[in-house]
Image 1 (spheres, one colour):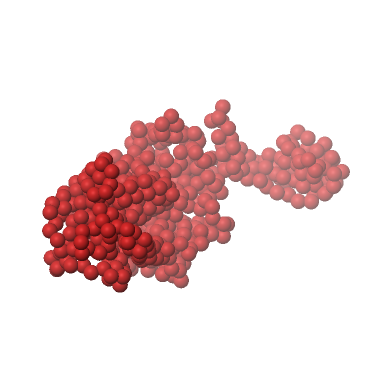
Image 2: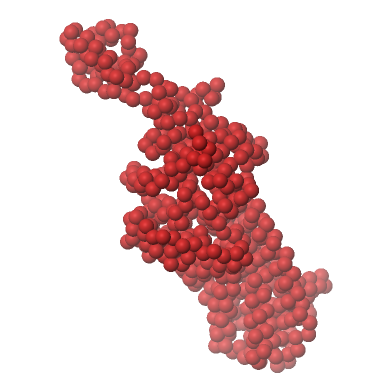
Length: 313
Length: 268
């Protein structure tokens, strides 16, 4: 792939705090206008990576470039092209939402008029107009995150770091954030997202880098990662335990799992669905009554479990 | 979307404009933090009235003929208020460091030092409120300053310098402290002995040998004596010059130290 399309490149990143090697070897790159999700459990090194990329922390080894600027040689250059939304909402509680936006805009070197106009625009976009002139300490958790994200967009930076933007939010606020992030992607910005929620990475990211214990454990598109785990699975719920017994006898070889209440059987299938037809006709031929059918797609949860287990060994 | 315009300014001018933005922010904090604002008003009045009425009778005996305790006390209590007031710089910095906002500032193309500048300079703003309130309250209970116009200019100038110096010292405490509670006892341990082992509330003549030696040579006594002489309209001896030297030295050491520690702390 063309190097000039890579907006973020990270290679051989290492960082330790005293005796704790947080990052052992992390490399990845992000294509212009795409979103990469850094996925990993707590303590995997996600936030440390973002802090190094946003010049808040210096690495022990490795090279990082953001939009052509080296984080070590040209931190000012990096700061002028990034927007950072951290884990804890980094807003000023005693200032109003509008004052927060204008202040940060001015610090990004926007002219006063531009900062004021852009603040208005963002307040509308993030549904904060009614609360614009209230101190931020009166905001709800979801509003604070929205304001925090709005603040990092004030100077329309081409690269955005979102460090666990939805951690601790209720489901409704989370889906609002997702909508906002999707809109952001439509505008062509390059995004690096960290998350411990597999669903979030699955929903939003073009590419996922799974990090565990300071190393890249796996990377690829959400689909590629899921394919690594294997097949779709058909979950058949039988009507009675008599049906269940008959079905297990009939399909013995193909069943990988049954559940304890003797109602469900799980059968791996090819994703084209041909297997489903043959299984159903077998059951029907033996007069076995089926209550419901479910196709379980492998989730990133499965990927996550498998990959992090592998690393542990 | 609006076309955004960026200012094009040199490093030096951006440092000043960043500092101005931060001063504006910290000043807003002062006005909106209402509990602290109440303290700014009432604490000095309380100290003034308590000292004047409780110690006044006893200490007046030790004062030279014709000087009332309230006139003597005023300089001490103003300096004490400013010294205690400087601790809010430490609290504000500790607060900022504990929340994510310093990370935000550091991810912006701005000067780190501007954050500290904002808190320190806005301290002058708050101390001006305290001092004005206290002088007005003093006038009500019998304070009769003899200072002329030049005297007042001198008093204000020294107070500005002193506030600035102590706020930078306080900034160091703010960077070091791990919590706001820690700030409170740290400053208590530093500021209390400095203000009480001085000529702020009582003449140093009757202190023990070593205490007297300390009291007469520490910065707070210099500043108190300079302001007291200006208030009473008597010769200032060397006190004005030694106050200025003390403050300038403190600023010259504390400012870069605080900035260095702040940078180091935030890069952890």
